[in-house]
Amino acid sequence: MTLTPERHLKSSGPGHTKVETEAVDAASRSSPATNGNAADESAAAIKPPSKFERLKAASDYLKEPLATELENDKPFFTDGAVQILKFHGSYQQDNRDNRQKGQEKDWQMMLRLRSPAGRIPVPLYLAMDDLADRLGNGTLRLTTRQAFQMHGIAKADIREVIGTIVRSMGSTLAACGDINRNVMAPAAPFEKGGYPAARRLADEIADLLSPLAAEGSYLDLWVDGDHSYRFKPAAAVKRVRQRQLQGAGFSGDPNEPLYGGTYLPRKFKVAVTVPGDNSVDLLTQDIGLVAFTDPSGRLRGCNVYVGGGMGRTHNKEETFARTADPLGYVAAEHVLDLVQAIVALQRDHGDREQRRHARMKYLIHDRGVDWFRQELGRYLDAPIKPLRREPKPRLDDYLGWHRQNRGLWFVGLPLVCGRLEGERKRGLRRLVETYQLEVRLTPNQDLLLCSIGTSQRNSVKEALAALGFEAPEAPSLLSRHAIACPALPTCGLAITESERILPAVLERLEALLQRLGIERPLLLRMTGCPNGCARPYMAEVGLVGSGVEQYQLWLGGTPNLTQLAAPYLERMPLADLEATLEPLLVLWKSTGGRQSFGQFISGLGAERIQGLLPAES
Image 1: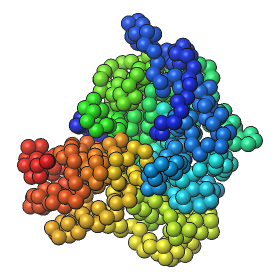
Image 2: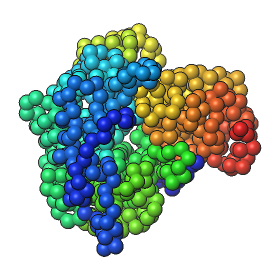
Image 3: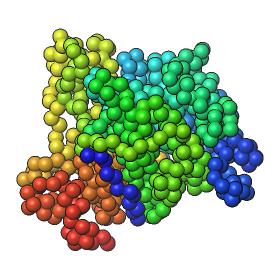
Image 4: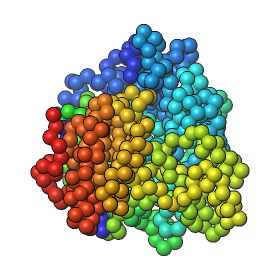
């Protein structure tokens, strides 16, 4: 069955010295050409670029004022440098637990890897583990985009950290910022079906959408010696990149032919998967690709979905979570051209005036997918055919032991909230180092140890059991798919807690389900703010921070991540969680649990659900 997404659903940095930017005309010269009508072009010419657009235009391809501020001895970057730093994979944060009135903030950097399909080679894993202990806060965190984050890095150490990562087969370029982010794909290292083709396509898209001029800036800032060989794409990608210099896809800037000197209006996210495997949360992406292969594993083409996105703002009705629309099917030889054409279209038509309205989901919502498909014809000379039939999607997690290939195995390890620390972190390092095991990270914040030889299985099993992974294939019903964002104390956007309290929330809900005699799982996701990093709006039960120890309650997503939830309570005290959910769970149980909880909620109707929930004060 083909994925059938809902359209959309509405619901109700440090302020140091401002960086001086160049004149408005510099931003105008660097901005991509508007490919709309003459009236659009006239209006765009009259209206001055926004602060962010001027900053990007004056940055000399993402160098300044970052390069200058790297040389001073202050413990923080000013706002302009902070914004450019994001394109290099880092956010400036302060630890709110350590704030003291009248004292300087505890400034630190969060650094994020770019690792397509979650692949972490052995040298990179060992380097990250070492860097976290020497120059971070002693922990590594698996993100919901299949990458590692490090926290607690001092400004004075960030050059050493990024340089070490690059020399160890890694990169942080474009892990954040107004640009294509880490490309997702199923993490499982299966050498069967379409999995190898999906991973290759993710790698190719990551190379294709890597910013050309910014690659030079990145290496100049962070790495001594010539490491440009690390950014050389495959021949097939080079050929497609050449077409960035042609037609409507050309930004007008030969140094940055796809992005131009102002890059994209906002972040951009791509995921690739195989038919039936929805481990990547496909409908939440700007571009979602379902790869079809022939019996030998060669890519035949992709079903394409466009315009998903989770971020929103409380009390801003014009912002909303949205699932992607089906665009159609594209043959293999046109897939990469299609991807860069969509990026170019968003470059030219995305909103560069209001950042909260700048994601591609709003462009498609405002103008419609039919307009989008027609306008895409200006950028892409290839047919877009009707979608191919897909099996019913499922949320795969790959936990436990699986055969990778003849003579090789991999094991999926559940990590609640994705945080690696203490003895578990030390023990996994020993296994990776001893057996040279490649690591892969899942969108569910779990970790796969790969390429385990048959003769090594028993030894690895014993070591994992000693670390608390006695039965990695069987975590508790709620924790198996529950995810949370980091939130407090380091995320500057967090309103309340998420990661630090998720284990306690799971314990409370598991106790409630046990008391009610319910043995079916619920898909729970939690965030400390409405930006949606843990994709709570797709969950059966979504908790979205709206005040101190208060959360919006979202209900009605599905276990296979194909339907948006809906908001029912604006400010539910966390202390009332059990009392709030119990009437709904009791009614669900009385029906025999024939449907998932999310499907059951969707069938009840909003009026009946509200009648079962407590009135808000």
